[in-house]
Amino acid sequence: MTPLNITTDEILTSLDLDRVAQVSLTGKDGTLPPLMAHDFEDCKRMLWSAAEKWLLADLQTLSTSSLGLEEVFRLELGGYPVRGFLDLRGSYRRGADQGKVVVADWKTAGGELDIAWQSRLVDSKQWRLYSLVPPGADFISYRGVSVKGKTREVYIDLAAVSGVLEDVENHFGGIGDQMVALAHRDRWPQNKPSACGQYGQVCCFKTQCDNGTSPRYLLPAEDILLSYSGANRFLTCPEKYRLMKTAESGIDGTDATRLGNAFHSGIEELWRQAFEKYGEN
Image (cartoon, rainbow, N blue to C red):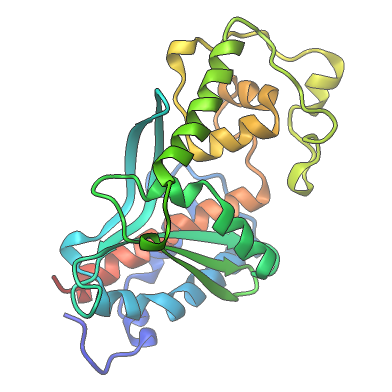
């Protein structure tokens, strides 16, 4: 039970922070790519900032029995299977929103959490997808944390939104149809040069694409399994999507990706410990 007069700092210092650090460095199963020392310092600062902003509020408002962390889901949308993860899901246990469900998604950012950042989230298909995961959601909370330790929340009330299912079905169904149409090709269209330097990083497959040495491999239509990130990758460059499917796991692991993975692993462990110790039903 959360004491009324406890502070976030007191909660944090009562937890096993060595375990949080270890999970951030290696992941729950010890398979995360290693972080550079400065990235680990960034990760610790980001974790502390996120906890200062949201941990106590979650403990005071969300039911422990309803709490889900890193939940795996799978839906059928537009005739195709779609999978993903919910970072955090829980129901409010008191107040005007008692019984209503919120899904929270952590967003790490190397830049500013500005209006442009907010607009990208509001326009995203991601929260629309999350809202459809049974038993559904009433609110979506995007929780942004920058490497500088700044935080910002984008809170979406789904009662004010319409046409979500049709929008998401059209999005994933259309992408699935394109993949089926390409399934007989052992190379897919290359979005050159637009996609070659996306996100300030040279694509890890650029040399292969430039010299024609990309592996020839068919992706059978029956093996199509979509995700939000995979759909974005396909729209950015279909050939990169195909090559990512055939390459070793983690080949596209940029520094930003490694830091994001470390943060997500750490924040899951932090919330799990806190709710086991202080949460209420």
